[in-house]
Image 1: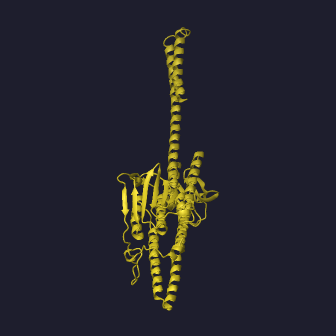
Image 2 (image 1 turned 135 degrees about the horizontal axis):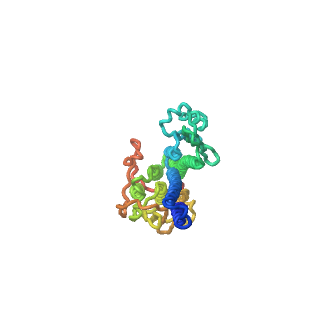
Image 3 (image 1 turned 45 degrees about the vertical axis):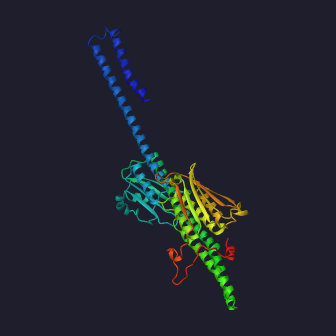
Length: 479
């Protein structure tokens, strides 16, 4: 349209001048002698030029106005995108809400922007931008908590003529308000209302994400407590019950003078105590942070393989491809993968009667595969029943894998059992690492005194073989 208008502004004057010149030389030649025809022609050209310039100026102003409108919309879009990225990235609540308030003030061009929000069970959040206006707003009670006044009323009490307030909602519940204000009274456009409403909606999403993260943390703590309780019930509690029964039998045998049989029972008690020590030490290792941020999954598995091999007297070999060492997994995925391998190794120690375990890690087709293979007795007829053997281990492993979009498979034969874990892969971590094998031969297990995480009381006897299996009765009592 603008192109056509520009050409019309140029062509119309040219055509009119040509028409007047033609008429002055023919029909009007007798009535318009020189220099009257020249004066008429010059006046006409001047008027047309003036009209053309006015039209060009009007079109230029319209074009500049549209460009300014587009720039303002682009700035609004960029501001909304920055806030949306902050919300989607799962950043902490306070910086995200600060970004919402800052963008509300800058995009809408106001003197002040403020946010009030309150979640059940948490202190009220109040933000004011710029901070220098807090002294002025203090008289209206805006920065102070618990005033009970609506945001619009407090902004009005602070002396702002133009005010615009949007509700912050989580579902159908209003949890706060986002408002902007300025002293000169210019009014707010429909676009301003839409922008502030969008920012208030993003603040609501940020508050909801914060609430959900808190719920997830509570659920994670609850699930971990349940796991520890199950392990204590299935392991330590049952072994202690076995020890209690054995000690009562020893007392009875000693009272009857049957010393040899009492000594046999005491030997079985010692074996049970050593096996329980290994369980407790393994549980302590499991309660630590599974994978450090700068370590990576493969390095954490190699480190744990050494500790596990020393405690269980089982040779552990960890082999990883260069792609697997560079693989970048989320912290949650690394933690779950580590816990699954840890559970698989625990099952090997308790049930497989194996002498060697191989852990293989490979990356391909946007996924990371981890295999734990032992040379034990296999699962037997329990291979297809995920919740029966071990009692909780396989179900827990499957649940952990599902939480990060992965899966766990079991393959068992008389030559041993293989646990295969597959989890989604994000991107390469970087270059420089090389693949290799870290083997942990079976070595004499450390005594309790050598384990700083599990000190032994003074005078207590150190077990000679911490990894010795529990007696048959104790093993039968444990799943």
